[in-house]
Amino acid sequence: MNKSELNGSPHNMQQNYQDAMAMVRKFGKPDLFLTFTCNPYWFEVLNCMEGVQRPEDRPDIIIRVFNMKLKELLEDICKYGIFGTVLTYIHVIEFQKRGLPHAHILLTLDSESKIRTKDDIDKFVSAELPDPCTDLRLFQIVTKCMVHGQCGTININSPCMRDGQCCKSFPKQFKDDTEENVDGYPIYRRRATESVQVGKYSIDNRCVAPYNPWLLKKFNAHINVEVCASVKSVKYLYKYVYKGHDAASVKIRKEGALDHDEILIFVEGRYVSTPEGMWRLNEFNLSHKSHTVVRLAVHLPQQQPIVYQDGQEA
Image (cartoon, rainbow, N blue to C red; front, side):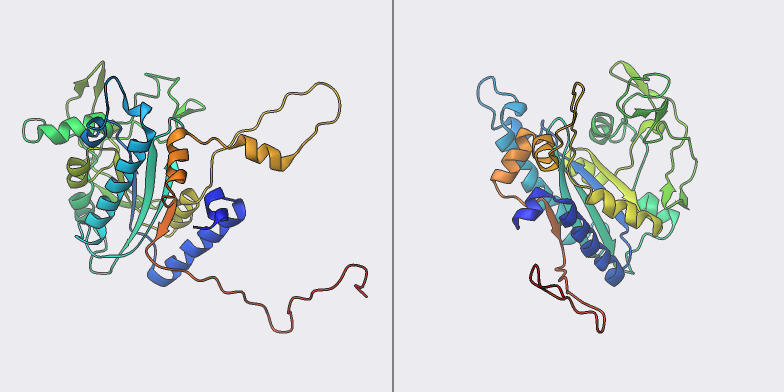
């Protein structure tokens, strides 16, 4: 991986986005969008703790375990075909503000495996609480990892609130049947059932993020699975995957000229958490594509680039 790719420069993000769109032109739009987030309480992580150590004390172990789990997840999807035959995939690693790594994965399936009907959607994606009587383990994982935190009128101070509304549109509406392709995404089935008490909150199907039951039981982590139904969602997804690093810059000054050094502000404004630092030190990939995309330099007829020396333009 070259230096500009590690630095995530805006130009490089644009290039990556163009590479991704080249794959769309060749293989068609993505069919599935997965977000896989690290679980610091995986037993492989806890097993390595010594004495009074907690997972946050060992970012080196967190990122190594996550990297291995991600490889296994991609192998299950691509090699063993739990969603069918995968034509292409692309994934990018991001780090949450609290430092945990998560991967955004886009999958394009072949024509035999395309998710076309609502029955296909229901086969792979669920947005409901499982029955604790028939599958207690899945119920425990869903209530721990896949429930969108209490927001809206119950908790107006939730981080997802923007102008009095949840930016993720939770809680959703109850729905007896899945609806295909509403503005690029399906509306998943969320049947009205009695709410369940989890901790101090009462939750029902309206709060559940879409997931795949098999993946959730195997990996015991937050794995959000979305079906992308229209070409409109493609640009959003790829932009989201390549949006670059979060940075914030604030400068307070008294009267007088503002000394604005854009490069210095960029360098100082980058927030790199300890796990992200460990990820980079281990030289793990921050992004990966299943296919190689070669960028060709092209120019229009009679419009070749011209190089001239300063002072000799004439």
